[in-house]
Length: 274
Image (cartoon, rainbow, N blue to C red; front, side, top):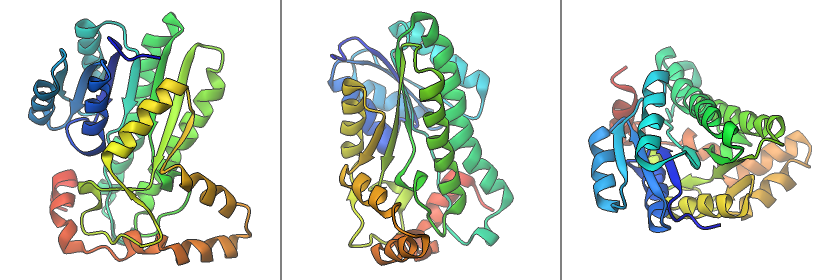
C-alpha cells in the first residue's frame, strides 16, 4: 500500500519512538496528527515535518481530550486511516518501594491510554470497514522485567488487548498490529545498563517496523525481528531453564542495576516528585 494522503494519528509523538514514527509516516506521504503531553514539542515537530501535519497537547488518560484530538485530526486530514497508540512511561525501582500513584500513572498512560485510543479509533473506522490500529507494547509484554514489574504488566496488558481485538474484529475490515521492541535508545532507558547479549535498537528501527507492519498487514512485530525466535524458543523450555536463560541474557540487569540518580530527571519529568 502507499501512505500518500493517509491520515495518521500518533500519541506520544513529540519525542522518542513516537517522534520517529511521525517523521517516517510524513516522509512516506501520510498526513500526520501528533499528540503529546508536550504540546509545544508536538507543534514544533509538526512544523518541522510539514505536509499539513498538526501537533497538539494530549493527555491520553483524558477521554474527552483524546476524542478532541482525533476530531481535530479528521477535520484537518479526513477519516482516520492509521491510529498509533505509542504514549508510555516507565518507573524503574523495587516493586515494594514504587509509590501507588506512580503505578496508577503507568497503568493509566500505558494501558488505559491505549484502550481509549483503540476504542475511539474503532468507533471511527468500523463504519467504513477500514483502518489500522497499531499498539506499541514492548518485548516485556511477552517476558518479565524484574525491577520494572508494573511497566511489564502494562505492556502484557497491551499485548492481551490487541490479541483479543484481532479475534473480536476479525471480519470488520479493521486491522491490528502489536509492536514489541527491545530496549530503545530513548530517554526512557536513561541510567539503565545495556546487557551485551540483549539488543538495543533506535527509534528509527521501530518506526520502520511500524510502517512495514501497516504496509504488509503484519500483526505481531518484534524489533529486532530476531527477538521473536529467541522468546518463542525460550517459552518451550521448562520454567527454571527459561528463567536461567533470561538471567544469563541479562534481563534482570536492565532495570535491576539501573542508576537511580541517572534516572531521577526522567522520573520527575514523567511522574513528578514522589
